[in-house]
Length: 432
Image 1 (cartoon, rainbow, N blue to C red):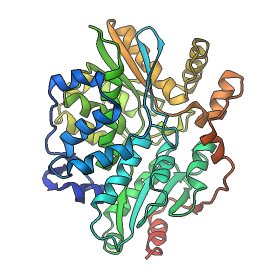
Image 2 (image 1 turned 30 degrees about the vertical axis):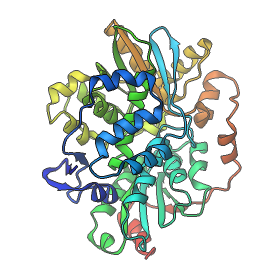
Image 3 (image 1 turned 180 degrees about the vertical axis):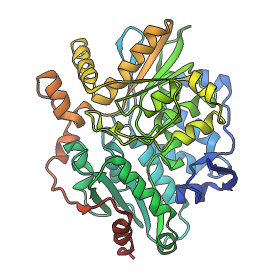
């Protein structure tokens, strides 16, 4: 399988280069040259299959030209070591719980897949692979824990000072070993820009082997499609159409859902739900795409004003904006609406995190406008990761899982960093 750049379809590379480079030299994102379609009978049988068995089938269809069956099984087994159940919140509305992994966030799947695949593909074991990651919250913790202690790999995480929840911050600033955290004076978009500039800097790339574990990397992005196959397999058999609502920041997760749809999964509709960082919902409602400075919110992992995966979404629809807007509906919500949703659902026996609350609101609004659907919203992180917001909303204390509580005991270790590329480049050159 070849992978092309979203900026130039003629620029094509193999799996190893696409994964290890992360970003094309023309600043484009890599996309598979073709999307395999799974047989209908296989999709129908998925209700009888385990998460891992579904993973073998989906990843096998995508990577069998480049990996052996044994490698595919090792990759899936390493990645899917925990469950992702759906929970009925109310009639025809289900939460897909993606917080049962090591860092209790949906990015655990992509981070574990990415770290394992990179270790398989790196040919020169004598050189240190340096993984650059920009995070607005959960990416940092998932990647840090996914790569922790991996020989021959150093992870450098850039995060915006004061704009990540305390618990999220603790999950990647207290680990040490091969994990370094840079606390940037800026917003997430500044962190993301620094990472992209580093990949395009010739001098740095001559001296260092750089890659990314953000969702711009296909090894982080593609495995997220597994959520949708597994969630669909768990839904009760029904004649109703199915919609998935995805709380969205960088738009990699919803893109993986669209990939699953194009592989044959019968999802009728996607809902892109955001906070007031609403550049994509505005686009989906007929306005031109226009990046804007990000605005801090209580759903901080979605505080993205220039989503990196937008070109990938366009590529999935082959640039057909009309089809894109028909298949994906966009909604956005304020902090006040987000908090109200957390409060409204609690009496039903379910606790939402701020991002899941945005997804729930988007799904409910879509279903009110379009009767006859069964809906799934993605609960992307454990509410305890946003303890301050949820406790204030509910007026009660949350009991943290032991895995989360343990991170609070660690000592935060960071390197302060401005948002100028010269300063970041100087730091990276000092690693040689």
